[in-house]
Length: 274
Image 1 (cartoon, rainbow, N blue to C red):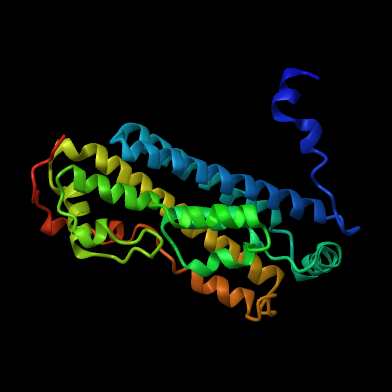
Image 2: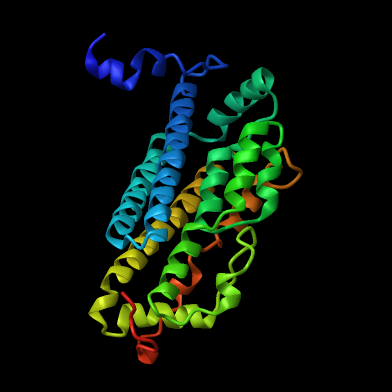
């Protein structure tokens, strides 16, 4: 086997697509879903790298990992283009075949997607429930839920660098949802507009987080559009409209204080501790 094929395990990779119908378009659907799964894992890996660097105060390396994660969202979101041909008449035979071969299935069951959501700091505990039938993956999800999100790590770094972050924010249970706090918004405003060059590295991290949040929002929107085109308002497996559930989640915004910057109130409240 050549080095290229050995490294990429192409002998295994090209055996992983196993259609369950005779529909010509099913391979497109299957391959795109697998590609998206790989991107979920890749983005999550980058966020974990970023968290490790943030805890050590290595902001250039953290910003680099965050920028890579943001770039991976470009690839993830572009993958939807390969399914723009699919309408409800194309999708339902595949969905029915999938149900007959493997049981009830939904993209909501992706444990790597749920892991990514938890890493971003969006933390409804019930997201882990549909994966309970996979003990190892369910345990891994709960472990992610019990650790600080990448945003928690950035906010903790702001505090270590001398910006005013309340103890209630720093000491909250990491498994709970982070609630926007005006003091955190003021800290980010200082980072972005306070004029202190010593905080420039924190701004680079904040800008990368904003790109990640935008990529996540675009993914949610494209998923909603694809579901509207291929599934409509039909009820999903969990008793509610899949389209309605997705529409609600489109409003999820990671890193909320980064969207509340107020340049007119910018000031350096505390000296930077390097």
